[in-house]
Length: 338
Picture 1 (cartoon, one colour):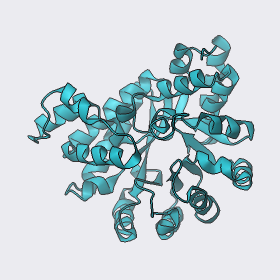
Picture 2 (tube, rainbow, N blue to C red; picture 1 turned 180 degrees about the horizontal axis):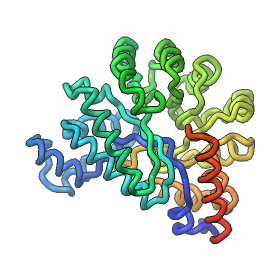
Picture 3 (tube, rainbow, N blue to C red; picture 1 turned 90 degrees about the horizontal axis):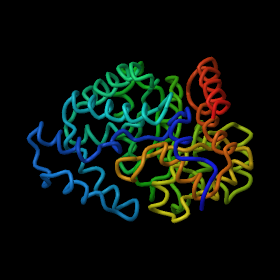
Picture 4 (cartoon, rainbow, N blue to C red; picture 1 turned 45 degrees about the horizontal axis):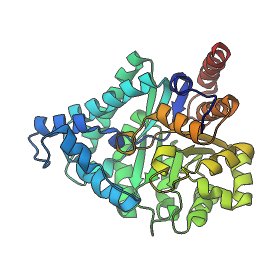
């Protein structure tokens, strides 16, 4: 289907990225470089061989590739290089503000110190300012780990509270409902941290998990979460309370051929602040500009709809009203000139 919205327009559109896993930006080239630097035998010697391992057709098969790939991340410099490589791509995609997920348990569980992870990523966040990208970090709990592991991780993280702005919840949702981590969310909120949580698409008990996250745990954003359209009352709740919804068309396309595009359009129509992001772009074939264009092209979005998605990304970001106003003016000026 053709669209009046060009790939150039979506690439250069000022936008915020709110659903991006830094570990999911590990491109084959960097994976190979880090493996060689750290003398790790990953069983692949060329970029092409690494690329062939990036093969999956559902969440479980994706995670079975995703977590072993992280073995190459060992030192603070590795995490810095990972962060900077993404931020350069973010700048090229005209991302003005990004809130980056990271998974400390995926690293501490294999012997990498928490401070190694956060110090490397935070250095990249600081240096990213030179690229004209304003960045912040969100620490995620792995929901298929125990709640005791989440408790320990939060305790370990709080001394570094000046280096991240919120918490999230990701990984395998099956039999791991949001309420499993209610205590950690209460403690994080009490410490002044923002709250978001993954409610992945088409999962068992999707609506119940969305309800828990919104009504009980008080999250400010839902990551994925587009199954919410199955419950008009929850949609109304999300619209009324300005809940951000972060949808990732290209990664959704691995689970649902329709990329959840119809759901995104319905949420826009209902006044829900849904926005578009790239999730794990090294694994799903595209960064944020590609995701904007994929949904615009497939669903013949109008320029106004695409611009609304970008507006929503700034409006549901965790920055000051003053910063939001600056970025929204930049967006307005871009649209006027294009």
